[in-house]
Length: 146
Image 1 (tube, rainbow, N blue to C red):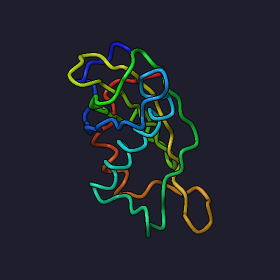
Image 2 (cartoon, rainbow, N blue to C red; image 1 turned 30 degrees about the horizontal axis):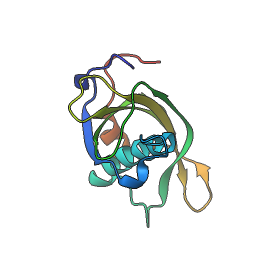
Image 3 (cartoon, rainbow, N blue to C red; image 1 turned 135 degrees about the vertical axis):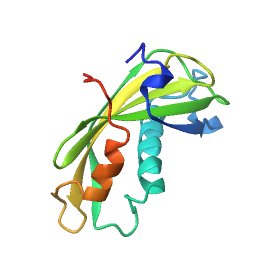
Image 4 (spheres, rainbow, N blue to C red; image 1 turned 60 degrees about the vertical axis):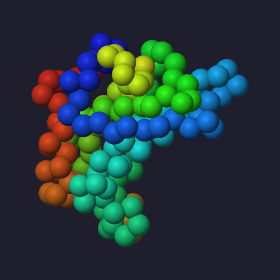
């Protein structure tokens, strides 16, 4: 995804970096990138009314994630997190996320994570609810990705 232009992502969320995101080397620490991924996807789902983090009977658990770093981010940069759905299964969804620094054309980092939908009370996997499936389909990638 290193060469992915912004146009290859159907949804974006601007995320300001925080002073505390920087590490002793003067750039955003690697663990913060996963937080940006999680924030972008969950904000998208909450805004569209298909994720209730407090009372929802069905929620998504992250079961796989990864990130590749291309260039540094530092406070006070603004991150523009592009998200898309790479694979929409029966009970799981694989998101791809690219982080663009300020107005950069190419991402400074790219990654993925997989949500498995579960019933909160039992922690057992369930089918993705129809409403969530419909929302996820709106950001589904047109081309197969790896």
